[in-house]
Amino acid sequence: MSLRIGIIKGDGIGPEIVTEAIKVLNKTGEIFDFSCDFKQLLLGGASIDVHGVPLTEETIAAAKQCEAVLMGSIGGDAKTSPWYQLEPSKRPEAGLLGIRKALNLFANLRPAILYEELKGACPLKEEITQGGFDLMIMRELTGGLYFGRRETKEIDGLLTAIDELTYNEDEIRRIAKRGFDIARKRRKKVTSVDKANVLDSSRLWRKIVEEVAEEYPDVTLEHMLVDNCAMQLVKDPKQFDVILTENMFGDILSDEASMVTGSIGMLASASLNETKFGLYEPSGGSAPDIAGKGIANPIATILSAAMMLRFSFDRDQEADAVERAVSQTLRDGYRTIDIMSEGKIQVGTKEMGDLICERIHK
Ligand code: NAD
Image 1 (tube, rainbow, N blue to C red):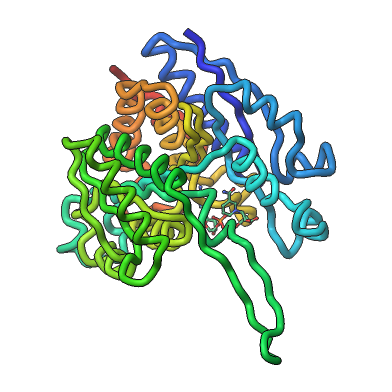
Image 2: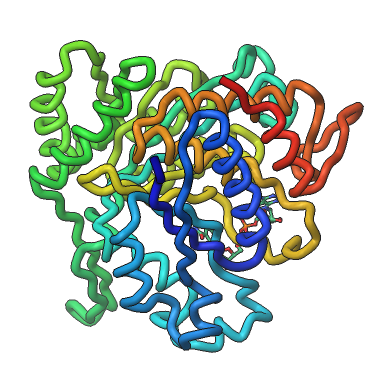
């Protein structure tokens, strides 16, 4: 059985961290008896260097032939990289937005996990972090304020800016279903976050989420206003399983949630469409400041590969095995520089990948 996986190594630390995730996938395949058929694709700065544009039709077509795509981060240093002399629509980030749109990736998943072993990196009080936490933010990615009509014009002599926030019931229903499906694979609780005391779009959101919830009687639904959710994430993050929310609220809350885990190098993410297809990538950027030094933390990318096994290939056992191997490596005291603490053993990108591979078993 061969899994067709597109690989976008990306820019900066991308090639280093993706190489380790490929190693982990191959090792998992050896143990669980599957193979991976990797297809290399170009996106972002790497594509600009070869084709002059951050995304080509060829990359889109090749990605569509794959069952899932694993990506390192893209982009460079905005102050020094020649990519940022180009107009905004030709810069690396435009490639990322373009591929998300072309593949109709409307659901963004960002887990925020505080590992017991890393709780020293968490800025919250110890009584809150005791035992760690594990929540998932499911953010709508292709609608709402970021995709609405916008303009700035003079009204009654005053410069006035307008941004439109639109959601239709189908857009809400499809993301809600995804949220409940994911909750079913976890602790069976959805917290739907909105601002229904003010916004019409949030009132429709709440109505449709309640309709979808009826199809999932085994999953508990609660509603929470976004301002309260922002507070609860730092007061009691353990209460959450899946947080389901619209584009802008999700953008803000997922950054807050990642901050409370304490390390960007540990955070995976996935963007899914209506089929099993997904684009999997670390939450962090391309870290040009440490690129090529062999010190980047590959764990976020390795955990993104585990999400890929779980959500695109329904290989929960294999995903569990990778996640267990990561936890065991941390328990055994190994750390990359970004998560290093006193008394632990510092390792580089490649060694971390090797140590995790050694710990994968059925
Ligand atoms: P960044 O996440 O790349 O770096 C922020 C800090 O975190 C840096 O000090 C970096 O060294 C560190 N860091 C990030 N990932 C790490 C890892 N795996 N291991 C160890 N340390 C790590 O954010 P930035 O500096 O704001 O952005 C750099 C570039 O990345 C920009 O071009 C930006 O547009 C791009 N970016 C891309 C994505 C994406 O591809 N989805 C996301 C965010 C930023």
